[in-house]
Length: 271
Ligand SMILES: Nc1ncnc2c1ncn2[C@@H]1O[C@H](COP(=O)(O)OP(=O)(O)OP(=O)(O)O)[C@@H](O)[C@H]1O
Ligand SMILES: [Mg+2]
Image 1 (cartoon, helix red, strand yellow):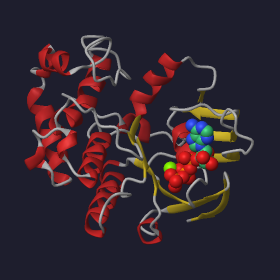
Image 2 (image 1 turned 90 degrees about the vertical axis):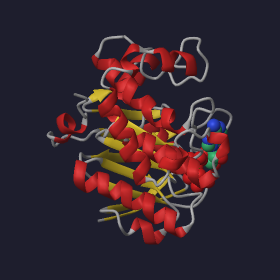
Image 3 (image 1 turned 120 degrees about the vertical axis):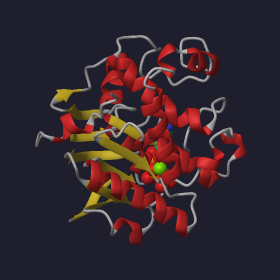
Image 4 (image 1 turned 90 degrees about the horizontal axis):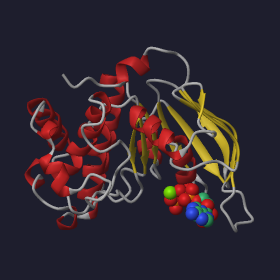
């Protein structure tokens, strides 16, 4: 059985990930993109992040998701300091607790919609089956050292556990109303459809934490609501902690907490 990770993570009351005094200065930039951020993300919470363009929202999300490192301060993941870890260990940690929706979706162009959503399930099963597939974090569209189209389609475990994975992928694509596009390639989709696939991909493993960078950014009001409700449902039904960036005050009101960032600083925090 494909077990989800959220149960084991949602029991403890300690934060899933915590930032202590985190600042970020990009190389060659005078200004701090983030300044002295203290923030803890607890199991089961739903946090919306608001703020003007360039305020540091994506930077904050990338650091929370161990995709980038701070210039100063600590990032603790279930109490483990992630700063000292090498990239490989960070990728391993990341694949154990996180689904990420990027601001610019990052679907793998050579994989169909179905395969893009299936991939995280194969990777998380791979962790349990000790190396029968390429390692977690190997998001790579070629066949050299990553999970490419040919290797994906040839893997033995693509067939084993297939029914359970099939029903998961099917459920997620139905939820984002894209089941009929299962065999399409990302380039054949509209911007909003790609974004919906990216959300399906982030939720399919039911991780304890989903970080979503403007998951509704390219969408019309109806689709934006659909995606936001999907995140809210994962939050209430699976206990998935959600941190989502949005420019919509209206959508943000649906979250339990809001955080407003201006010039790299948290200026307002509301429950
Ligand atoms: N790789 C980078 N190198 C240098 N500066 C960067 C880099 N990425 C972001 N920045 C700068 O850091 C600041 C914060 O950027 P960030 O992408 O976090 O903003 P944001 O709040 O997500 O904005 P938006 O709403 O437009 O997505 C901006 O001034 C931006 O120009
Ligand atoms: Mg951004």
